[in-house]
Length: 343
Image (cartoon, rainbow, N blue to C red):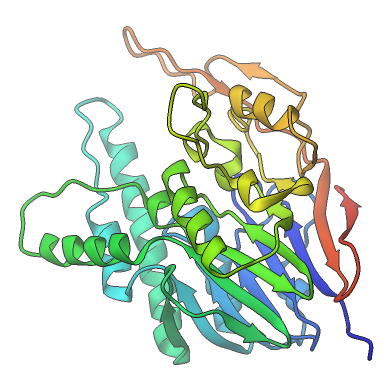
């Protein structure tokens, strides 16, 4: 009996991410979605076409991972909305992200905070209007089976999710709280098909990978053949301490085969971190970046700010190398990687 292949496509989205999973039955799942940046990704609705969308997943409450999810929900046949927090917690989380800076840039910070809060309001409103099934996930959830593909949820931990839900609800009756990093809520997902596994690392920070590794072990999964590098290769997604001086560090590659394929979203010259890039280059990894990593073009003061004693350093974003990278996964064969060049 022959089975259709599973396809996981990573689309260039500037500083954000867009991942589309095409299941063997021709339905799809969308893990994060941000409008295209500087390449020919195309409109997200053209990518989806007339196919049914099993789920849209916001891996964590950051706008650069979810703006296009709103468009998908309003215009496509979507069944479920996946995330790592309850809707009220998602909403309260962004209300508490208001930042006050005692400087000339206070109005900029206020405007940015309002914009990101509005994103969450728009997303939750779209979910409500369309009557989507709402499903929060953490590592305690059982795998979901879609057309022979098993989706495993490796992180965040159930204990963390519960404690953060409580903290956010308590925040409603307090004048101030200690906000956490949205990346701490990142869903780490393992996509299993036949004998192959691909791990989607979201923007998970390094502490989450110890949780993910234990979840991976309990699920008795084979080592992954493919990986979405976490957090664009940022330093906080990796534990690069020497193993002879610290307890054995656990990183995303410990869930993978010795040699595997990895995709990197890195839309700015700040990503990947130089130390991370060096650590990745020491391993037998076939690293597929959606952007040219070797380019560095500096503009020391792009906003032309002239405040006394102020220094502004910003680099122009990298040029896209590909508009998409696709993992093609046969049921009983080896992973193949295809590329679509940037426009």
